[in-house]
Image (cartoon, rainbow, N blue to C red; front, top):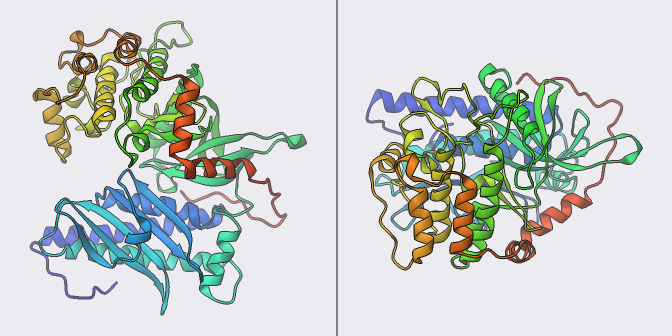
Length: 496
C-alpha cells in the first residue's frame, strides 16, 4: 500500500518492525481467506479471525469491523473488552483522540469508489505525531481486507458489490453448508491467540442433534506441534473434569486436517462483560453468586484424580473474568484449561515464557516459581477485587511492571469497601501462598458469609435483563436450521 504521505522512521529497526507487521498481516489474510473459503465458513468467520489477530499484532485494546450493504450495516464484528460505540466510530477516519488515554484509528474499506464499511482499532495513550505509523499500518490492514472481502463477493450473487454483500448477509453469518466432521458450523463466538470458537450442531442419524461450542486450532497454527499437543492436552483434561461449574467436554479429534474440541455451549456472557456493563456498579450479592460458583468448580478441578487414582495436582493458571461464563440459567462455568499445570509439569515450558495472563498472575507464577492451587486462589482474589471496584488491582498498563507490582507492591484497602469483603480479598491476595485460603472451597465459604449470594434463578434473570441483545443471539442459535451439503461441495484439507 502507498501511504498518503511519506513515512519517516527514526531508526532502521523501527522501519523493519513496520514492514514485518505489514508482511505478517498480508500472510495472515491469505491464510484466513483460504481456510474460510475452502471450509465454507463464510465472511463472518474470516472477519472474526482476521480482526482478532490484527488487534493482537498492534497491541490494540479493542477493535471492530463493520461491513455495509446498500441500506446500511450488514455485518459487524467486535473484539476486546473496551466499550465500543461502533455506530459512531465507524464514521470516523484517521486517528481520533478519545480524551488523553485512548486513540481510535479508523480506515475505510473500499472497492474502487464504493465504500464497503470500515475497520478500527483502539489503542491506549495519545500520539503526539498523530499516530502516523499506526495509522499507516491500519490503512494497510484495511486495504488487505478489501481484497479478502472481494473474494467473498465473487462467490455470491447480485448486480453490485453492496447487493452481493447483502446476499452473503441473508445467507447467514456462515456459509450454509459449512461442516467439520459430524458438526455443522452455525455462528462464530470468538477468536483467541490459538483457537477459534463457533456455535455448531451435531449432525446425527434420525435428525437427533445438539448445539455445542466447537473450538478449533487456527489454520496458521495447525502444523505447530507444541500448539497441537497443548490443544490435545486441554481436550483430554476436559474429559476428566466433571462438575456443574466446569464446562463439559464432549468430544475431540481431527477432521479434514483441523483439530477440534466439542464442548458444552454456555448460553450467557463472560464475567468481563458483566463487570464492565455500562449501567453502574455490581451489587455484592451478584458478584458473590458468580464467584462462589466459580470457586466451587475450581475446587473440583483441583481435586481431580488421574487414572491411577492419585491427585492430578491441577492448577488452572490462566484464570480471568473472560473465562468465567455466566449463563442465563444462573449457572456459572469455569472455562479454558488450555495452559493448566498438572503434576510433573513445569510452569515455564519455554525459556522466559511464563504461562498465564500477567494481570491475573500470582507472585510465584510471575517469578516462575513452583505453583499449586493457591496460585489460582490469588487469581480469584484479583478477579473479586476487579468485580467489586471495576478496576484491576495491580494494573500498570505494562506487562512487566504489572508483574513487578504483583510481586512487590502492597494493595491498599479501597475507600468504601465493606470490611468483610476486604478481608476476603486481603487473605486471597497474600504474597506468601501459605497465608492464603487453604483451598477454593474455603474462600467460597468466606465470600458467601461476607456477601450472601443471590439465588441462581435471580442471577440468570438479572443477566438476561441486562444483556437482551445476547439473549436474542442465543435464541437465533436455537432457531438455526440444519442444511444438507451439496454433492459437489469440496471438503479437502486445509494447508493450516
